[in-house]
Amino acid sequence: MKSMHEMALMGDILQLVHEDAAEKGLNKIEKVELIVGEIANAMPDALRMAFAIFREQNSHLFTKQAELVIHLEVAEAECVLCGEKYRPDQKIALCPNCNVPSGKVLTGETFQVLSYEGSLEK
Image (cartoon, rainbow, N blue to C red):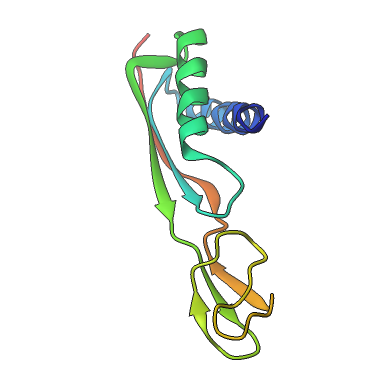
């Protein structure tokens, strides 16, 4: 069911991008760039698949070459007890030094639109 989550996320992203582009007088989307953290609960491959489906089903909103670019943000956490910095594989992870789930996530949770490009193409 994870891909349904990404379909909904991508639908929301593309709706926001399209609305903003329309306000700027742009007719078609050429490129969307996202920052996706490793522990942001969004799978990049599923997002790419969702983008491809939306592009195919909504050709009036996209140029033929429209692309999705995903910048992956590496996850990093710091243990609030011992100060150890480590790469967690989920939001709540055990510190590899003291084996306590006391990490404060520093990076890796981001999920946002970095930029988009559009055109006046009809």
